[in-house]
Length: 264
Length: 157
Image (cartoon, rainbow over the protein chains, first blue to last red):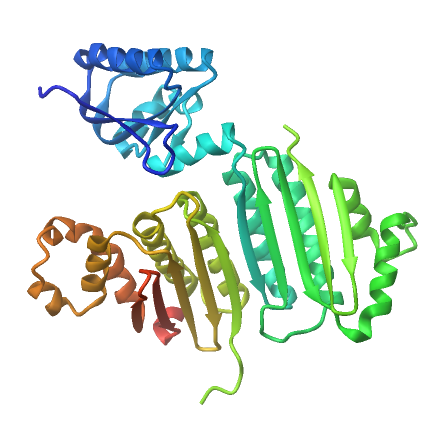
């Protein structure tokens, strides 16, 4: 059997991340070279490591155990070891041993490196979206933002609450904003980092709806709680779910800014 | 001649593969909401996946690269436009060859192309599922791909 090839490099876009690339079969005989490679990197204080598994044909359980040991050493130094680019066979082995619950597994090295910057360096990511002022677009938008929150490892509860907020605010923006027909009438900016998600939802104001907007702003300070009232409960709900909530409304447009902290 | 304006959805997201799945589902759900068939939506989703993956893998050099994606929804067709900051010259050459006619590809003298032929499969699927595919690379290497896909009777079967 050909020996496992090991190559150590720095991530192209994220120099603080070390990439250890493996090629071949990760069998029992490869434990020693794997162990010494990690030992050297840990001694050199390279604590954020991505194991590039894209050229690994198979992995044995002793090697998984060895990688777990290396990860434990890195965790002790406040670093981590994550896996990237695993092929189906390797993923199946990891799943069978429940190792997928221990290691974070990424689709490629770039995503894995990105994770470190996200987790340890406070990296923020922006997503901008604009869509027509039409209610039929709101369910896909709310689901899209929920999926992003989930993808970024927010838990189900947080993701659902974020989705609820997006739904309420976008529905209001469509209902009370200017109808721009098929243009991008509603703008949504999502800024997400490890600790919080910020939403900024804007729309142009319909001159005929300025009074309705003023009423809507009133619900913020005095949310309706009476069951007899049929409108205005949405904003009360948003206010309850969000950690910060501001409405900036003028005759030209309305912008709602919301901050939701990650609760897990 | 079409009398109505298309619906326009514009999206910018980080050049990170984690976003591809939410984006493809988003477009698919919108198409279903706009009364296109599930088959049409799924096939469009495949196109979105391929072009977004290519843009991220080959068109994002910097760590903060952004992908700009626009979708126009007409009554009988959709158009996608995807823009990235542009990749290495060999990737751009591959892209040009992949978008061109297959005969042109056979004539290509790009040495690594044979080995990379497999990786062009994504664009082959895109070409198979769409009516029109245009590539534009500006002087700064900013790369724009435009795709048009018509809704045909077969999509509703």
